[in-house]
Image (cartoon, rainbow over all chains, first blue to last red; front, side, top):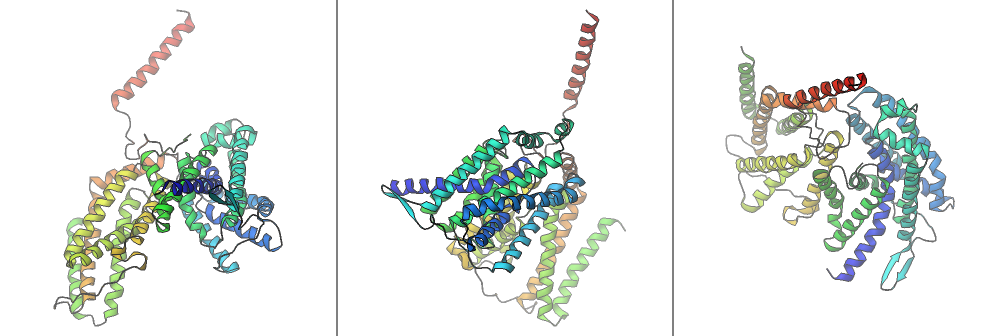
Length: 289
Length: 238
């Protein structure tokens, strides 16, 4: 492969990787910190993208639309967690696998609901930064990727700061370490987890906006992102926000290089291949707690 | 009659019944439908050995099924292999693949194992899609060979073979359940269930949940006593 092509692939990969990090931070909180097998996370992303699309029909900018949707998604997350807790978590050690089946079902319901409402066609939004490019010497960077790159960095940094600097953030990290100890300190682990799951789902609104900014969406798109998001969350080391960013970039660059050298049909295997390799060689991830 | 004798008699009777049916049942559709039912008995029994006895939820069992099918496809395309050779080769290839993947992933617990199996399924699918020899993303269909005269049609032959496979699969599962393998699988399942869903670490193996050896336990207990004696001595001012 010529060196210019490789450099271009790497640059595109870094931009793509930050986008992958943004769509995975929610899962890093839900799966990495709370141990909830949230396989419906990508479905919520697509739901967020469709929410942004509906707002876009009324002339609202996609990113602004994403921000407006955060409270709704937060409440959705709280409701889903309350149900999950009451039905599965309370009842003992098998919650992980039963929960997996539950979230699999939730993902299906979301997908089918989207198909019934919007049909199976691809949807996209309009914004000043979609469709334009930024020429940088020989390279040409799409502006939408740069926007998603910036928002992704901001989102990851905000969450990272929130988790390490605020009281609730530290309580979320504590609930991941030792739930009983947190209860002994007088905090209610269930309420903390409910709050954290709300935040995790809230990020789906912003990440969903990025999803529809980066490319057109369709109801079944979530399934493609199951591998990617879980790959990033596990590679990051479950719950580490800077790790999520690094893991996203690793996946983005790997996918972009494979796309340029081998072709698009090999791309779906990249995320799962890395995931399998990480699980086999270093299950604690790169930045494991 | 002893349990195993009863089982062997039932198994033999089932195979003989299947063979007799190929001679007497008139409808071809019956054999097609029965073949599908028997096939799912084999698949479900295979899943149950890992999922039911050991508690490992495998989402990738379809991938192993497909690898077996594509092994047969390769053999047919390469040198028109007979059915028996296809069966043996497919079992060998998927068995080896299962062994390799098991060595890689079985130390993962619960959901991590399940995610790894999803990964294996997607990787297998991508490899097949990119292999033009076996048809790629278009898939592949082959012409049905002519059946031996005794069976009448190839569907009937497949039905009889699948009946035999189903009986073999159930017998194998029964052996696994009652032998030392089943006992250790159940033990590992109980031990895994006792440990709550913690993130996997390179040192935590679900198949290595044995208690520490007696010497280590004795050392820990005696250390504890020694420390208590030391503290009591210090408190008394010695």
